[in-house]
View 1 (cartoon, helix red, strand yellow):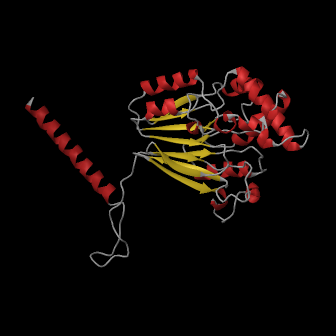
View 2 (cartoon, rainbow, N blue to C red):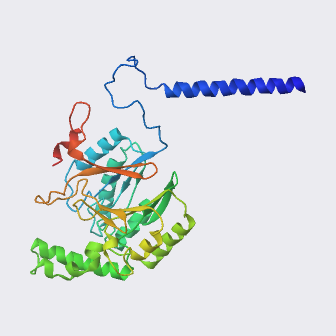
View 3 (spheres, one colour):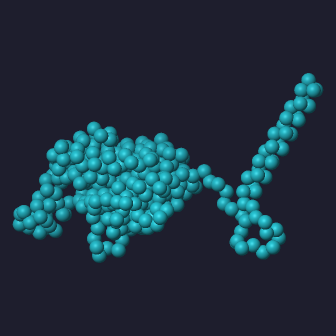
Length: 332
């Protein structure tokens, strides 16, 4: 028995020595030969390696998609190599009940997206979910219109800002169709005076009770996550009634969270409820030439103890030759 104890002590001492040697090796990652002389660097103390991950977000492709931009974004995302990519909607032009046309548009988007080397998370916008037919197609292709997931103890709430009862959705769709005819000059009228223009859903969207109850339960079941990201297409947080984000914001009040949406095609950031609320620009969607905040970009979020958010303008993401992707010549 005594011999066994001595043997175990020797093994523990050897393991301890190996651990110390490994620590010394790790600490000698930075090496130099300048001895005690002055150094041409500010510090030899480096930030320790963090257990983190980085994800990317793309914004609106549509509302007047410009050819080549999204394809270039896919190439750039592959070079940046985030863990996964999220979207904030308006992935196709949509706005029709023609199933063949919708299939063609979704096939085109999915073909380009399939070239990504990491997972992509779909989220619907008004162009993707304009009418009941498009809802049905979404369900067939992608399943639920709103959902959540967890990654490394970070919670993602993927919301549907086009969440109306079917009758209301049809009313909005028909009013929108009439307004588009006014814009095209097919019928007389002024766009700003159309029924569609005055509808709160046009700019702000809406959230139904069932969706609210779903996310309420999700939050109750996940009280101790590191961070919560709330993504949507339209800025539900700007709508002040019960169909806006306010009821959910009250449930989020005691946790760190970030809200991100698209739809406006113009980048902006503000602090609301002492949290970051970010409206993304575009990743191929139409732009107003006079708007300096209307630009194509990819957002990167490095998630450590808290999110570090960086927005990269696509025309500044160059390859090793200092050039844009081949399809990126149309980025402007």
